Image 1 (cartoon, rainbow, N blue to C red):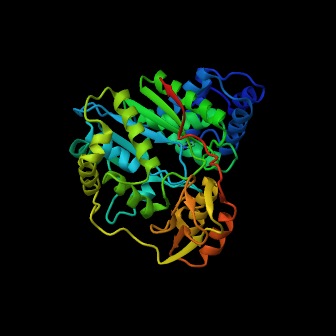
Image 2 (cartoon, rainbow, N blue to C red; image 1 turned 90 degrees about the horizontal axis):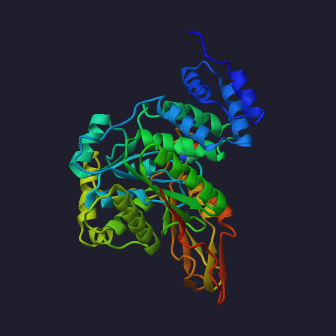
Length: 429
Ligand code: URA
């Protein structure tokens, strides 16, 4: 095959701050997926993009080229409207678990293709896999059947979905090029557009525990992704939300499943409940679904019914006891006062060191490992009262997990809480 371009021309064009043409972008993504453009050439191009950026036309074309590298799913045989949510990830962010069955209970269909955790933020599939018997890998036919039967499916994205992104993401991870907004936006949106949902709500996290700690950068990422979705014909919404403090009272796989079930049973921590309802309302509104209000579906048990059906349809037992770690260690408050801060990043890294997360792809995670928080910012705590319970199967992990928690929490007599509002910004596309 005679190639249309040479990779070096495209790399030098971006190095010299020129715009890439549509044919150049189509070719470089296709040729990289075919193995014609080498990893070292793509690494150089990614670094040039990180340093010199891309305009909105280039980002849109780059996203389309990644979508075209694989299959595009189609849910037109469903008699319900599809809506999905994507979160950029954070500590204790278990929202997908109660949200998917909740939106199903309100009349939507939620085709949620999720990933595994890497680093200090957890992955939805790792959380769901702590439910005995639950299976993440489904064929496209099985996925459609679960969606038809239960209104929601949470499963792993198959190898056929945006294969260019799989290769590129692994390369970005080892070349310090993850952080470029055009590359993040196109990576996330290529998978979500290929997934075939007609409405998408983005939860872009900001604060210490988020991938975009600067709210201005989080807002730019949200706007870039909303525009990509609109260009592809999706109904889009984005919320920029707080991740300076962990979400809810747990971080860790089985611990987060337990908390999600509490939310579905009509209880659970107020921040998790509030964000779940807000995102569900956005999804329903964006998709144009006329049905039950999410707050009612949590109260009347219908969201819980959908959860049980969804878990069962994927081989899980919703009544089985969840795994519990072999070892526990309680961290007590050093002094009395108001908790003014709780650093999400430090809590996330600590949970990760306890075994809740992985440091390289393919590593096993511990289902029971993680951190329970007994109090959150704004609450009064007595000296000596439990602040955290650390869980792990391997006691030697406590030392390094405790090390990073040092200074994670401030307790001040008559102190004032210093934290971000839950929702910083809303964008509608
Ligand atoms: N998640 C993705 O899927 N891609 C990115 O680039 C960053 C986060």
